[in-house]
Image (cartoon, rainbow, N blue to C red; front, top):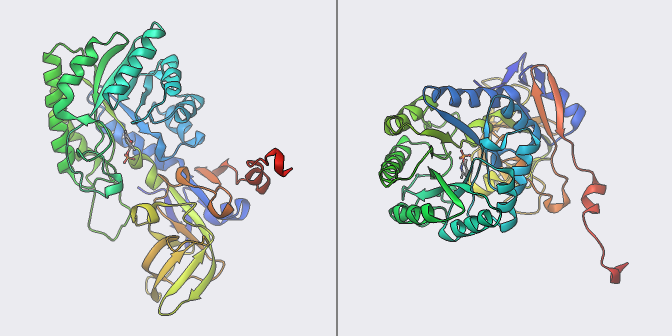
Amino acid sequence: MTPFVYRRGVLHAEDVDLRDIAAEVGTPLYCYASAGFEESYLGIARAFAGTPSLVCYAMKANSNQAVLATLARLGAGMDVVSEGELRRARAAGVPAEKIVFSGVGKTEGELAYALDQDIMCFNVESEPELEQISAIASAAGRKARISIRVNPDIDANTHAKISTGTYASKFGIPIKEAPRVYEKAGKMPGLLVTGVDMHIGSQITDLAPFDAAAERLVALARHLIQQGHRLEHLDLGGGLGVVYDPHSNIRPPEIATYATTILRHAKSLGLKLVLEPGKLIAANAGLLLTRVIHVKQGAGKTFVIVDAAMNDLVRPTLYDAHHEIVSVFEKAQDALRECVDVVGPVCESGDYLAQGRTMVLPRRGDLLAVMSAGAYGAVQASTYNSRLLVPEVLVKGSSFAVVRPRQSYEDLIGLDRLPDWLT
Ligand SMILES: *Cc1c(COP(=O)(O)O)cnc(C)c1O
């Protein structure tokens, strides 16, 4: 169920008219619907409710405090990939015992901070990292709970920039090395081995890679238990895809089907299951609202120039991602459609939100909604071209709140400092 629907011909976020938000906040802006995060989180939690499990939202997808607090209230844990994310999660009220820490390059300072916070688990990605964590924990007279991220050597059939589960990737350790590395970890003084972890990629729309990877992970866990490791949990990562293009016939698996597949392998192990969905929780809970600046007839091509750009939403440029773009004023089914490029004002030919898109030609001043922008949208925004960081708005029923105000030009310029010799 999408929280964004037309009512009396105008697109609403839950019960709020998007024109009202645009009028108060200005465009471009990200608009999130609480119901979107809540329904997808609860859908995942319910799919695994029959077995001990913890949904650790991969907060790199969208780490706004209001989003984290919305999920934390429902009982979500978090998967963090930096000290900044860990601090954000704690600030939003997420208990440390529900936080796992992933990432290939955690620094000494980050590890020490996370150890001090006593997080649930470090997802360790290399042997040097194991040694480093053990040393830091021993020095502090502590034991760090760890799991090792194994790379099951599965091709997730997704975009190269978001595929992480083959041996060509920088992530995790090869699964065939895992028994040896676990044995080593089990003997390190500062470590408590508690889990096994994987994450094979993002926007995976096919069940087969999850099926194959879960089978390998579960086999490894059984082997480790036989070897005497006292495992407590199995972390299956995230990566389940979402529908970005409602007209495409590619359909990611339903969460219930995904859960059945995972449980078929994992249930008899009796370990607690940890899931790290990011996109599945956030993508369709948000949109990017933008206004048309010009409609420009190029040589043989029409450009719809809008006030949002690649610095606000980089996914089309970075991952060749498709985002549906709809008019806030509903267009008649039989309205004449044209093929256009929807582009931003940034001085880069890679600055587009859609290329070769068939849509009803908008007019200057029209509001457009770039859909499915709740994940990997605002978090990847930059100020390139000295454009202000885009504001974020959260809707709940018939209320809305600015959960990140638009930056000011003073804030933007004030980040820089002049050296002595220029003042
Ligand atoms: C990014 C990431 C996720 C979430 O991926 P989604 O495709 O957003 O579900 C989960 N785990 C790890 C370790 C990640 O890096």
